[in-house]
Image 1 (cartoon, rainbow, N blue to C red):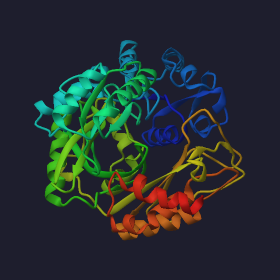
Image 2 (cartoon, rainbow, N blue to C red):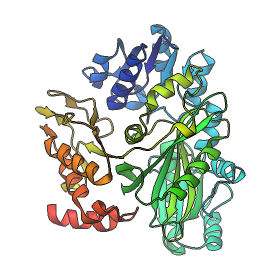
Image 3 (cartoon, one colour):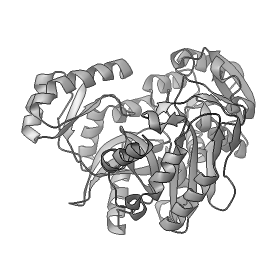
Image 4 (tube, rainbow, N blue to C red):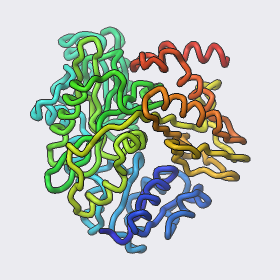
Amino acid sequence: MFRKILIANRGEIAVRIIRAARELGIATVAIYSTADKEALHTMLADEAICIGPARSRDSYLNMNAIISAAVVTGAEAIHPGFGFLSENSTFATLCREVGISFIGPSGEVMDMMGDKINARTQMIQANVPVIPGSDGEIMTADEALAVATEIGYPVMLKASAGGGGKGIRKVEKAEDLVDAFESASSEAKAAFGNGAMYLERVIYPARHIEVQILADQFGHVIHLGERDCSLQRNNQKVLEEAPSIAIGQTLREKIGQAAVRAAAVGYENAGTIEFLLDEASGQFYFMEMNTRVQVEHPVTEFVTGIDIVKEQIRIAAGQELNVRQEDIVIQGHAIECRINAENPALNFAPSPGKISNLYLPSGGVGVRVDSAVYSGYTIPPYYDSMIAKVIVHGANRFEALMKMQRALYELEIDGLVTNTDFQLDLIADRRVVAGDYDTAYLMEEFLPRYCEEVG
């Protein structure tokens, strides 16, 4: 086992990793930008080292500075968390080249699964259903037009090397495709340094179902059940739950087995296989693989009892998975709400500022809050607006919904605007309570009503 690891991240995920490492008896090193000098993760870690100015590219994306911090402090491994460098194959490879373990998959596998065209090819070979679409990268609008004509509209343009909702455009008809392609390709090139696109038929509305997998270096791959992430705004997840109310046991087993096959490509560590489920036909399709821990991993931890971050560390240290598929039993229901420093009444504009008073509702059985904020802390304007995750677990979905309602009522963050009231309204919505929603519901039905009410 490692003696010391460096956490190449900030915020609640850095705190989450520090806590897991401490429970394993591992010393931790926090890195921080000048804007994060007073951040909680710098106080909880055994050591903390400044790696640059506030801008991400000068600090949390500065590979050389992070590697230097690991070398100077004697860290044997680096955990990237999510976001920033977590899916950067160059960084993963650089860690290996300097003799530092990267707590995640290898750069080669990351490249293979992170590139959507390669991932699609791998899934076809693994007998995992894929959405009808282009066979390779599309570099021009004319190519896109030809493929779209063949598979039919509407279609979705996606950045080949993308993620996080960037470089994505839905196109309803042929006359809109050229402008959409040029816009998405430019956005992808700016965000990922690669303007290549691919195109697939739109499965919409649908259920966004993702399956958590764990894989060790001995060839053992297991899945930890699915999460339903269909409630999204602008391709960003808002609320997640596990298990999905839309899936019966037979389909659950099929999707879980498909996820295991998808990971049987030399993958190692934690990962997530994302699917789109067409509820009308019952058919599911591979969408993409995330080669990192997910923001919503706590709901899976609640229903399985498996600490995913600890498993990540153990796997990277060369240990064999100590659980098998037959050991995984889904118990109860879990829901996660993302709490962001943003103003829903102003189109969810970021709302940084100083927290004057804070109460996190962590009391009671089955209530967990993952956060890195405290009373008196100033939310910097440079990073993601998520400041907390409220996660609850109940014996069934109704109990989980009631626990979430109670927890959100108790949550108090004064001094800035958050989306807490928005989340309260969402979980009280009739369709959400019934579990009768899909990827279209939040944007096309709930939000118009909500904006009319708060506007």
